[in-house]
Length: 192
Ligand SMILES: *[C@@H]1O[C@H](CO)[C@@H](O)[C@H](O)[C@H]1NC(C)=O
Ligand SMILES: *[C@@H]1O[C@H](CO)[C@@H](O)[C@H](O)[C@H]1NC(C)=O
Image (tube, rainbow, N blue to C red; front, side, top):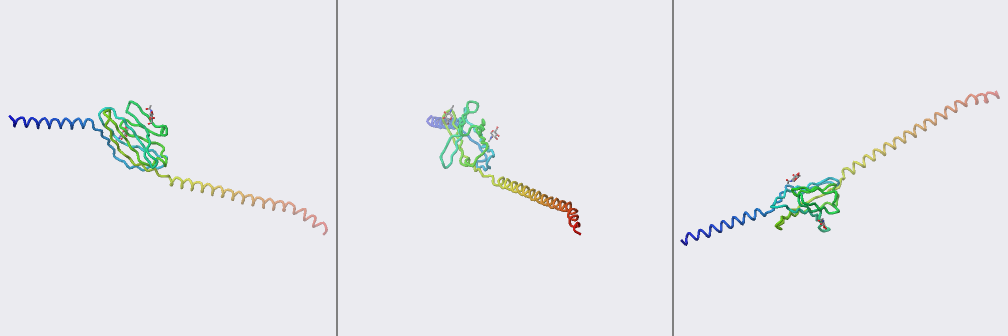
């Protein structure tokens, strides 16, 4: 009898722990993301891809952290509300799975991005991303070389024009001299 009760207690314990584990699973938030280190160039877009799952509608908040501190980019609940901070309005795309797109990147966007997910029960979980925004040196160089070529072309055109004008002047002078020649001949011939 005592032996039987012992197993009873153990069964209850196992049952309880399994139930607790199931509850824990049901309440667990999972944030899946593949790439957390991203490198982009100025004016490009970046897509922070995550897939959030939890019981109930999650509240998703994205924040930006840099040397100057942390600030909120936006908060949303899929199909409930979306609240984007004024500084980021027009540059942020929100997705139901928690992903965020940030458009038209600037140098100052380099830093650490954190997504915080909270479920209706108040549990929360965070995942961080690192974004590096590079300057577009290559395009600057290309722009400079195009400008240099254009300037050289204009200079060449000016030199050609001046050479042609110079030649034309000499021709006109020669033509005038030739036109005056007979008169000169006549005046020179007269005394003879
Ligand atoms: C989240 O959703 C977007 C748009 O539907 C999709 O492109 C992206 O791959 C999803 N992310 C993950 C990790 O599933
Ligand atoms: C939107 O977010 C800002 C800052 O996070 C907050 O001050 C504001 O009250 C929010 N607006 C709404 C409508 O929730």
